[in-house]
Each structure stands twice: as C-alpha cells, then as structure tokens.
Length: 246
Image (spheres, one colour):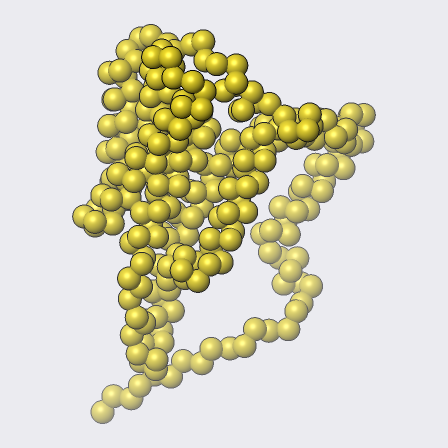
C-alpha cells in the first residue's frame, strides 16, 4: 500500500549578510563600483556628465536586444536569428529609402519587418511545436538569404539626416536618444513581467520541477492557456527590438 509523499515548503529564512554577499548580483555591483573608482582616479574627465552620457552609446542598442532575449530565456526558449532579422530589416529600410520613403516611414518599415520576422518565429514555435533552437537556426539562414538576394554586393547609403539624428542624437542636448528608448523598453518589460496576465505565463515554464514535487499533495498544476500567446509576443518583441537597433 503506497503512501503519499509529503513535501513541506519552508518559509523564507531570516535576512543574513553572508547570504547577500554570496549573491552573483553583489559581485557584479562590487566590480562596477571598483571600475568606477579606478576610472575616476585615473581619468580626470571620467565622471563628467557628458562622458557618462556618451558611454551609454556602447550598451543601449545591445541592451535592447538583450532585454527581449532575457524574456525568451525565462520561458526556456532561445532565438539565434538576431543577425538575420537585423539584416533583413536593414535591407527593407534601405530599399524603401531608394524609393523616396521619408524617415518616419523608414522607421515604421524597419519595426514592421522586425515584428513580422519575430512573429514568424513565434508562430513556428508555438503553433507547430518545433523547438525554438531549430526554428531560429532555420529562419536565420532564411532572413540572411533574403537580404543577400535583395542586396547582393551593393550597399544602401544616403539615409535621411533625420533618421541618423533619431538614432544618434541627444535629448535636452545631454542624454542620447537611444538610451531613453532602452530605458523605456526596460520599464515596459518590467511592468509586463509583473502583470498578472503576462508574468505568471513566463514563470510557469520554469515550474515543472516544483509541480512534480508537489503533485502528490496539491494535485496537477492547471495548464496556462495564454502561455503560447505570451511566447509568441516575446518573439515579436525580440524582432522589434532588433529592428530598432538599425
């Protein structure tokens, strides 16, 4: 006669400095403080506001891509078609520029192409159940092939100055615009992750071990019907963020 195995969930323990100091985030913070301290000592203009603002150029566009990728990793998926989507979005914008499309239209085309490419990835993963690594390896080759066929050995140049200003200009003459865009997307991602219609759908993918441990006591965990929709939305956002990098 089998007996059910009981599993107790321990309450969160009391705060301990030793636990905090062993965290990976604490180490990263310490490294950051050390780098800033060394930079301020060795370079006179290191802490100058203009220098600090310009330094955001080095990470803002990469952070846009990393943000959506982080959400994909949270739901236990991956997307390796980054370069492919960048290429096809850039080619679409370049071709539209040769046809006389204004700067606003070019930006809309780039974002739209990125959303379509990300949506295709999400559709193949969620509707047909194909592993995301397989899907995105295939679409990476597809998107790069499209860009190569359209562009060939040529190059698109002479973009509007307005488009360059949007990507490389400043707000209030100090903070780069791309930094504002990156912070806005980060805030939006944090809000979405905390939203009851989105956050649980991400976190439930990582709950399989927890569910198996408690199944004998709590019964099966209900299936989240919006999970596939959430994953598809993240793929679309990944495509949009890549197109914004252009």
